Length: 201
Image 1 (cartoon, rainbow, N blue to C red):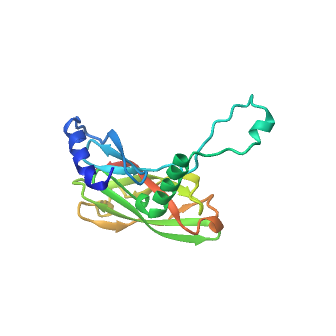
Image 2 (tube, rainbow, N blue to C red):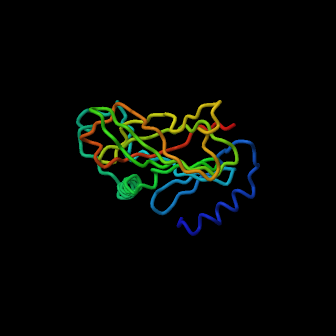
Image 3 (cartoon, rainbow, N blue to C red):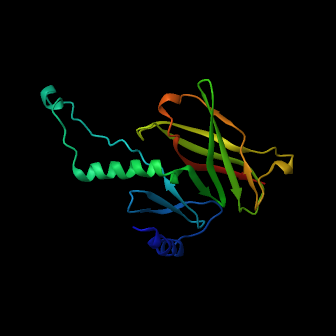
């Protein structure tokens, strides 16, 4: 499906959705480049992170000689893996949107073996945002998933309204420090984001 068809699909699915206080998935759409887009009932959408490493189920009752033989991957599977790898490298997954909040990965900083991440946040939400939590999936330079970590990219102080993320504002996050990422194999800075929680006041 091309992007020009996405708006029409959104209209059809949103027209049949029941709207609630929080966003809920009402369906998915697969694009021509292999990307899967999740459609939400609050008129938002987001890319769904994909696992770029194909899995093969092996029957452990097969003789060792058969297991050791060369496995031929169908061309369609190879193309799908290539498309998904291209999606990860495209940078499209570096941004996540939910409930009128947008989060974009902006910078990586290293302190010895600890990785520091910075994000840009913008809001079109009518309420003051105090917490934005994301799940970040990291991929190595071969575009294979290596880690998934969840953290707050925005953490305001409840009694200090000036620290809230307000409608119309674009602000930078603090530096988020994460462990377990190999600097030598993360030079392409490949990751995908998904907003998993938003708190407002």
